[in-house]
Length: 293
Image 1: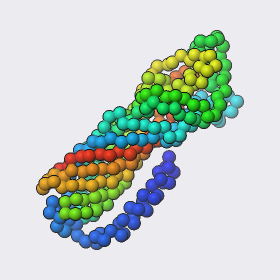
Image 2: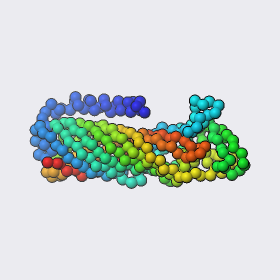
Image 3: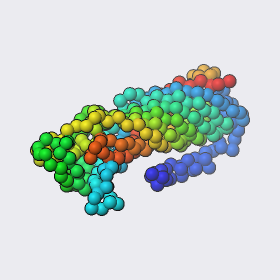
Image 4: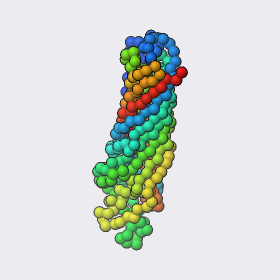
């Protein structure tokens, strides 16, 4: 996962460094966000944000929790799905505490992000075999292996998976005064998340197996619904515009690209699986901020 972060952040980091060296006022004094006057001082504030956006699940990977008996170093089956669309199920909410001195600042934040998978058809690569126990199908009283083929398609129902992510993180940013009462900023942040994944179905692998096996006349019985919680991590790239409306109050608009690494365990019995994915989202947030004296 570290390599994803390094590869996808290098271009942003280069732009960030370029802004630091090329901004015409970086060698000047700081500025008063209320009067626009240049001076060297500290400013502290808190903001409350809410907003909506859209996203995708990138690099969705699933594998059996059991090993292939013919090759114990490999899982019994694997599946990989690219670019599953997601959408907000609730507005994103964030509470931030921050401050800046001169042209540099930082923030600590607590946030909630909720996404769901809307109805869609997905295509995936799958390899290996599924152990079909006689207790989970209704056609015969035998247990057997069923070989799965690549590029199967599955029609996902509305809200097939739901993601609830509660995060705590921090960011650093470069503050860019635009006018006397309008200040822009661009930065980068890291977060640790408690991610809860829920579904009416046991798990992505179980659901796909049920659909594939149905075409051959087998009815795989559903196990209990999915509800899994685990710790993940992520990073985000915020760009903001703050508009000071009076001495101690400002409005803020934020454009945020975030990537959250999520893993969970689904299904049970012989269909038990391990899943991991990256939830990438673009959010537009609007907030209200207060300067702290």
